[in-house]
Image (cartoon, rainbow, N blue to C red; front, side, top):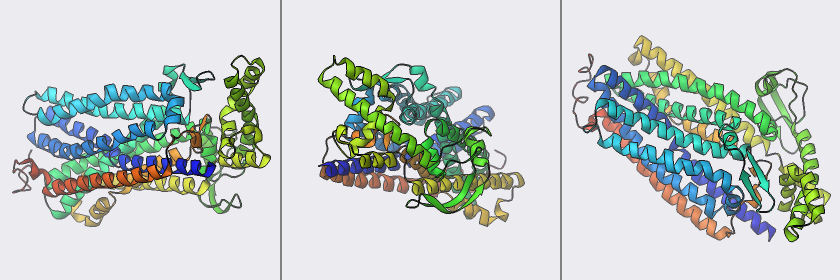
Length: 523
C-alpha cells in the first residue's frame, strides 16, 4: 500500500515537472520580448521614425505567438494544484492562494487586456496612448512573474505564517512579510532578468541570421544593437542577483546550498568553492575536486567568520529535529482525538517547530509511534537532496550565463565597429547559441525545485504528504495527454516562429524591407 502511495507521489511530481518545463519554454521569452518591444516603441515615440514602429510591430508579432501559447500551458498548471496536490492546497491555500488570486485578477487581466489593445490599437490610439498600452502590457507581464514568484518563494522560505492545529492549515499572519520575503525579491529579479536575457538572445540570433543571409540588413543591425545592449544589462543582473539568491539560500535552505556545492563536511570559515568536482553519493565524498579557497564562504555568508554546515552536519541536526518532530506529530494526533487534552497541547507547543521533520517519517510508517531508529535514519538521509543532479545543473547554468555574457559583449563590439560582415563565424555562434538561455533557465528551475526536496513547503510539509487521492494509472493517462497536447502546441509555435522569422519584417505587408536593404539607411 505504501509503495503504491509513493508511486502516486512520484508520478504526480513527474506530471507537474513536465507541464512546468513546457510552460517555462514560453515564459522567459514573453518577459524579454515585452521589454524589448517597449524600448523600440519608445524610440519610435521619441523620434517619430516609422522604421522603429515597423520594427516594434515585427518583434511584437513573434511575442504574440509566444504569449498565446504560454497562457494555454500556464492555465493547466494552476488547475493541477487542485487535481494532483489537493492536500497541499488544503494545507497552504490561505497563503499560497493570495498572490495567485491577485495575479489572476490583476496582473493577468492587465497584460491580456493591453495585449489586445496593442495589436488592434495602432490606428485607433495616439502615439502616446499606444506607448502607454505597450508599457502597461510589459508591466502586467512582470507583475504576473513577481506574484507567482512570491508564492513560490514562500514554499522555499515560509515566512509571515503560522500553523493552526485545530484546522490543520497554515494561516497568513503578515502579508507584508510574504510580499517582501528576501527570497522572493532576489528570486524575482534573478528570474525576470533571465527572461530579459532570453529575449535578447532571441532577437540577437534572428538578427544574426538576417545578416548572414544579407537580408533586411539595416533592420537587423538596429535590432542587433538593442538586443546586445539589453542582453549585457540583463546578464549582469542575472549574475549579481544570482549572488543575492545564493545568500538567501544560505539563510533559509542550508541543505540545498550544501548539496549544490557538494560540501559533505563542515569546513572552517570561510568555506572554499568547488569549481568542478566528482560527487560520490555512496562514499559521501568527492572523488576529486578543484576548489577556490574562501570563495563560497565570502559569497554565501558575506563574512569571513560565519561557518557553512556540511551535509553530514545538516543530516545530524535534522535527525534530532525528526526525533523532536515525531513527538509533535503524536501530540497533534492526540489533540485531534481530544481537543481538550492539556498534556498533548503542552507537548505540541514544545515540539511544534519540528513538526514538519516528524512528518518525514510517515514516508516509511503511517503511525509515527512505531518509527524505528532505522526509519528515522532514512528520513534524516532524505532531508538532503541528491548531490550530483544539483551540482551539475547549477554549474551548467552558471557556465551558460557567463558564455552568454561573452556573446553579448562581442555583439556590442560588432555593433560599435560596424563589422558584422567581417565576422561571419561570430554571427553563426550567435545563431547556434539560441537554445542556451532556455537550457540555463531550465537548469535554474531544476535547482530551485529539486533542491527544495523532500519538501513541498520547506521544513513544514513533505512532498509525499501533499498529493491527491489519485491512482498511478490515472496519472499515466493524463501525462500522456498533456505531453501530446503540449508537444502539439510547441510544434505550432515553432512552425509560426520559423515562418514569420523567415519572412522577416516584410511579413508586415509594407514591402519596405524586401526590395532594398539600404532604403532605410537614413531612417
